[in-house]
Amino acid sequence: MELRTLRYFVAVAEELHFGRAAARLHMSQPPLSRAIKQLETDLGATLLHRSAQGVTLTPAGTVLLNEARTLLDHTDRIRARIAAQAGPTAVTVGLLGDGTDLGALRLANTYHRRHPDIEVHIRETDLTDPTCGLRTGQVDIALTRAPFDETGLTVHQLRTDPVGAVLRTDDPLASRTRLDLADLADRRWFHFPDGTDPLWGSYWTGGETREGPVVRAVQECRQAVLWNGTVGITPLGHDMPEGLTAVPLTDMAPSRVVVAWNEGDTNPLIPSFVHIATATHRR
Image (cartoon, rainbow, N blue to C red; front, side, top):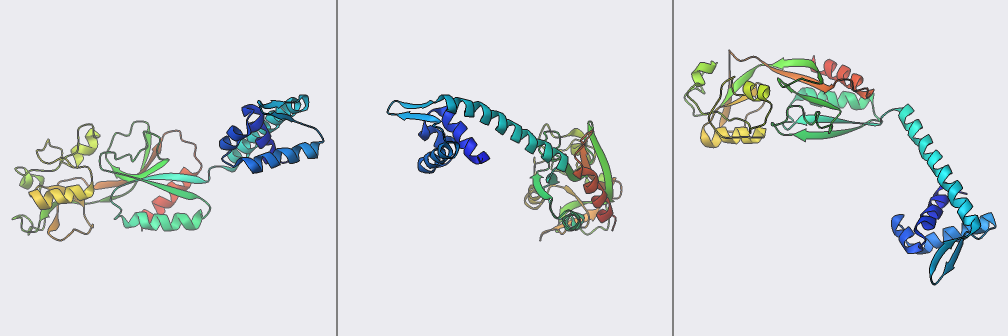
C-alpha cells in the first residue's frame, strides 16, 4: 500500500462520493476510481459499496479508514519532526525600497556562496516602515537604516554613512561644498505620513517639524525636490538623477546601516546572516 493511495481512500471514505473526493484531491475522477479498485485488489477485500444512491463503507473499509488515518497522522508527525531537526530551508529578508546599497549586493553574493541551498525571500518596504515588516512577522531579518523604535528588537550596526541635503542643481545652495541645517531652516521639506515611527521621521527631517509634501518612497522624495523645490535628505554616495545634487550636511548625525531581528528569535539562519553582513559591510 502506498501512502498516496491511502490518502485517496481516506478522501473517498470521508466524502462518500468519488466526485467530491476527486475535487478535494485536485485530480480527475477516473484515476481516483482506478486507484481505489487497485487497492481493493491488492488487499483482497471490498472496501466500498457503490450504488446509485452513493458510496458506503464495508466493514473492511471501516477498519482501513481508521488504520489509514492513524498511519497518515503518524507519517505527518514524522515529516514535521524531521523538518524541525533539519532546520529552516528559507529566510525572508526585509529591505528598504532603495536597492542602491553596494554592501547589500556583496552580502547577497557572499550569502549565496556560503548557503547555496537556502532560499532567500526578499520583502521590500517603503520608507514608512524602517523595520521592513519585522514587527508584523513578515520577515525574519531586516537590512535597513536606523534610528527607529528598537523595543523588542535586536539591532546590530553594520556601518554609518554621512548624509546630505538633496537640492535641485539650480538651487542657490547647490554650489556649496557643505551645508548646516540652519541654512535650510526656511525651506519646505518632505515628511512621512502620520503613524510613521517618530524616531525615524524626526531623523530625516533634521529633528524639526517641517512643512512640505508627504512621501513614502525614495523616488517620491526625489520627485518632490525636482518638482517642488523641497529639501530632501539622502545618504551620500548614491547617484542622483539628472537635475538633482546632494550637498553634505555637517551637523547631522550619519545614517546607521543596521541589521535587525526580533529578540529571542531562535532561527539558526539569523546568526550566519548577521556574521556575513558584518563582514561584507566592513569592506
